[in-house]
Length: 71
Image (tube, one colour):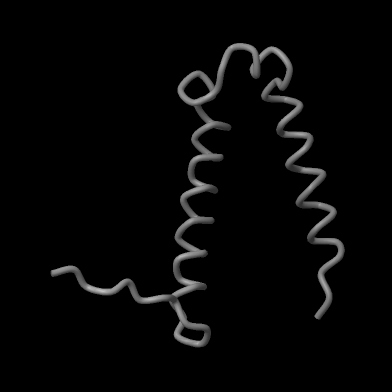
């Protein structure tokens, strides 16, 4: 006997919980790629995007996002 698959319902907090776990794992993978590029990136990617260019890109992105925060 198989149990029926239950759909996620809005308002229970499960959708946001699963989304936050997914985004957290994605962020962790990004940090590992940034810190240890030889583990999870290809040599072709490392030729095009250097560590210094990624630092500049991330700094510019976060500076822009934090400057546009509205309270």
